[in-house]
Image (tube, rainbow, N blue to C red):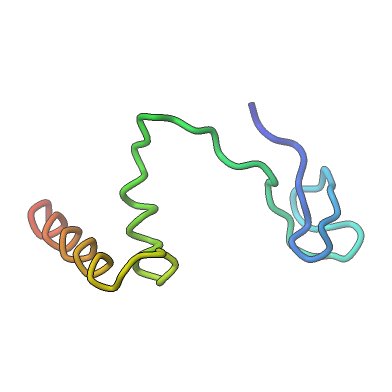
Length: 78
């Protein structure tokens, strides 16, 4: 089921508009998290993305290991 409700990133106002906030003109987003699935096909990519931009709360050694494993997997498939 699609979510109709949107929330402004600037002022927090809820709206049905999909493009911009009618109150302040700011960008809107879906306020609900995606559904949880134990068979998450994209978990690896989300973790990698967080590691690449530095948002992964892990030790530098762990972050480096994740990136090396990904580079090895990309090298095998490409």
